[in-house]
Length: 248
Image (cartoon, helix red, strand yellow):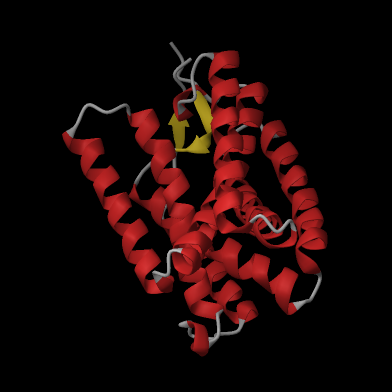
């Protein structure tokens, strides 16, 4: 029987390393457009949303797994997630707590509808256009929620960027230990890790480009984004990724 492969990568250590780079790039890249270019959160969100839609359509219509296309789509989700979260938190005036709560509800609703419609939210079942669409919508909500969580941890909770990075890094290590040492559903652990890599990237991105007076390194958002993008490109080139085997 011929094996069927999904158009998403196999979940390995390299997957998670590139994912963290992508989420960090989403923070610096999103801030570069909304803040450094002074376009504002709403206009920036509209721009990145259009890019996100284009890449999702390209990903769905692709005949097989293309690493570059997949990760460009991930970058699109994380940049639109950054500006959308900032729009909810700041422009709508509901604050980081309100924004995180709203986005968490949207993420859970997305996962629930996906599960009720197709019977599974596992990566191994993403082998149809409908499953892919649910996958990318869920990822977009998870990236947006992650941004809000990162901002809430660093600012509202007062832990700062370094403290936030330690918290989310430790949480990811706990999830990794649960993956290998417990019988907790690997699908649940995957989505928990996927969500938590975003706030980790958010606080690292903020640490790179925020002013020294706010605990950042005050690096150029443009140079930081280009550097992270180059690191991603090199990782994708040198570490060949295989598509995940489909469960269908």
